[in-house]
Length: 306
Image (cartoon, rainbow, N blue to C red; front, side, top):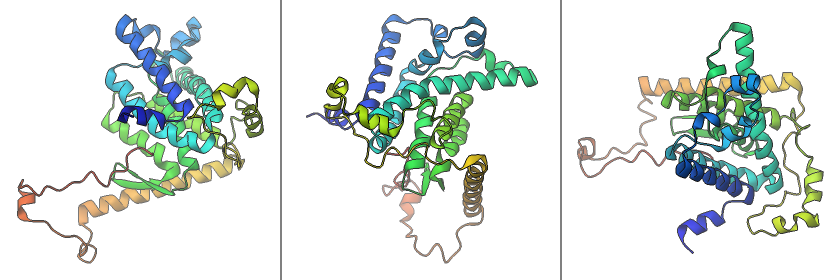
């Protein structure tokens, strides 16, 4: 078995399916070259021209080979981890509803800013890509992860629940041309789903477990990459702490994030101190001046959750 076939075989069914759909759509873009502005998310065209199909097409189309490549690698990493925790059927419904809900809240926020403060840039802006749903999945995966903290590009540690928010800010600085509101919409939908605010849209764990036993889905359930729902359920939408509990949790995560950033800046400006530096082994001078003993600084980067 080739390395590619082995990699694909390890991707759960729902995650692999949406990756295939996005790749097929991009092949259509590549060979047919349709006008992209017909498929992008543009709130003005959705609201005033009733082009509701953009809710779906804007998530499946991509702007370039690098765009879809980065999104599919992130989908493979985050989606695989999440699907193995919640099961294939729950993952499928999460993705299908996520495509529509992230586009809906994107449109709503753009319209709200327009009617309240007259800011119309977002109403006319065209955006495209699956990254909004990826951020939704990242929030769910981070909330279900047993890890309490994560490293953001090896620079600063943040709580797992704050990890998607840190990525949102840092990626916007690195690539300012990406859609901030699109990513923010995914985070908001993921946060609401994890706290049960969107339970009306998603089937219950009991229904999904019963569905796995239906003969109509037997072909899907028998697939090697199908992941059955855990006995304990998905763990999504159970915490009904109310708005006060939600704000307290988010506030605590933000405070921890700020604390970690301040500590990192302190180390960068004032150093670690002589006592803290005793465990560091300095290499030869050749490494500092471009010799063969180069320092590898990429081993500490955890990257996106796997």
